[in-house]
Image 1 (cartoon, rainbow, N blue to C red):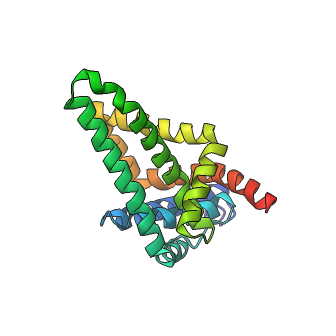
Image 2 (cartoon, rainbow, N blue to C red; image 1 turned 90 degrees about the horizontal axis):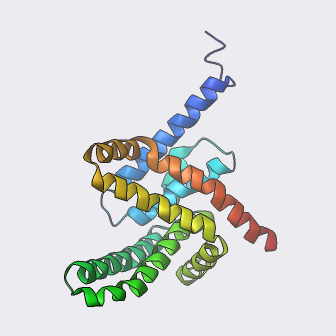
Length: 209
């Protein structure tokens, strides 16, 4: 029994990491409730997830809190800009597809491209702000450069979320299941997995510098 509860026991190590991910997920979900704070919540989650990717597990709540509050204003501004543009593009696509004649359907193409760029920026902006101290213009610039320099990863993440969303919208049972998973551990788990790739992308920049 003593061996089982030994901190160096592989089972205990795995359980400890799962607990850290659950705690991180709870912090993220709770801080997303006001909606306007989703940006700081994403930054806090990635601050922890990137440390986990570096092999630094522990101090989950402290790291999240420091990142959440440390760049609160900047991350809120970036979230409002990206989220607002994303909502605008989505509304335009809805109007073109459902309210205008079929002859106008081709107008969707440039808007889909703009939406793709907006989502690409959001994918990298919050991990960047979690990792580095940058001004807002630099955040947008570097997010675009990273998204272009890591196209396979960018496309994979966007397609993954598109597939998950499509499955959830077309199957009520799976929607409940996916919602439960993301509410419990899914957000933090994906952030950690993505951070393993972000870490490699960031290391290329750090090595050049």
